Image 1 (cartoon, rainbow, N blue to C red):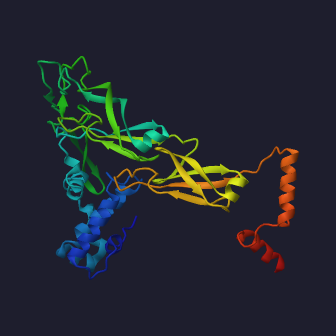
Image 2 (cartoon, one colour):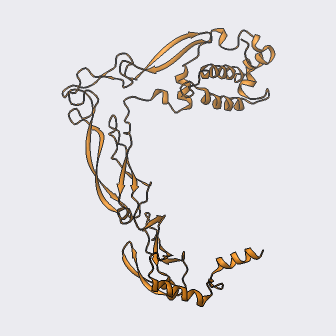
Image 3 (tube, rainbow, N blue to C red):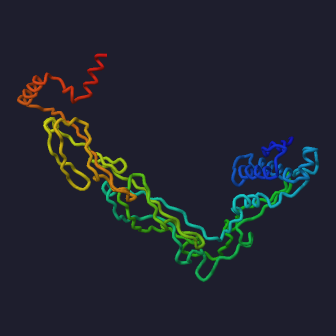
Length: 368
């Protein structure tokens, strides 16, 4: 199979500088590195990119390639050249030494997530709640070493404590050195001859722990709270992870919440809105009086400032919105019906056009 033009492989032109070639190579090497890209042809593409870079980054090889192309026997991997340190070294170069991570270095424990269900008012006013979570903790018998008390882990004789093994392969492109996790110690770099009977050599045990969580006032449905250091235990003396508490707030039978504002609906009779009245309205902190002006229309919204939910970040407090809904009576006595008929005759059976913009719009619509 014929090789692609090296300039095409790297996406640069023939006048590209060494820095431009290097920049293009670094970008493509990250993209196609087998430790990152799991596509079937990633390895072949990576080798192609490496081949192109080795040639175009060397002035002498580049001059030969520009003159002879792929026919020059000294170019590419076909000459039996060594692939250097292999994929692992390239990975180290671009990803901060990830391929050579010390297996015995301290590592932070995993984070945990817990869903807490709250009553509506618990979320509004906040509350201290105790929860119980299952998590891994450092084994107290072996203090996390995994070895039987009085003994200690030994260095793995197969990988020398590195946790990785180098596997060499001869390919048509030359000798390739792949770095893999040591299967004898599972990448820990240690071998435990006598395991701790409490944790079976894992260094951690699973327990259920009770934790007190302070729920902040104003927390809303779907929000979360980070409890530092209450996640899984760390490894090799590393710090524990964090616990993330996600809140599920139950709906209220009367109040609705939108952000920090509270909404409720108050049913009133026709007489109350027509003549005006003073009513009591429930709020989160008790009842308050609200004056209803005469002629109030259904759907009117009254605002009670500062009667909403305290902001979870301490930025003030929301308002309560009271929506008025006029209730039409269903079971009228004959006397009540007569009074309403008399009222209808007095008003001509038509709504007040000056105060009812909706009917005014309807009337204009019929007139065209």
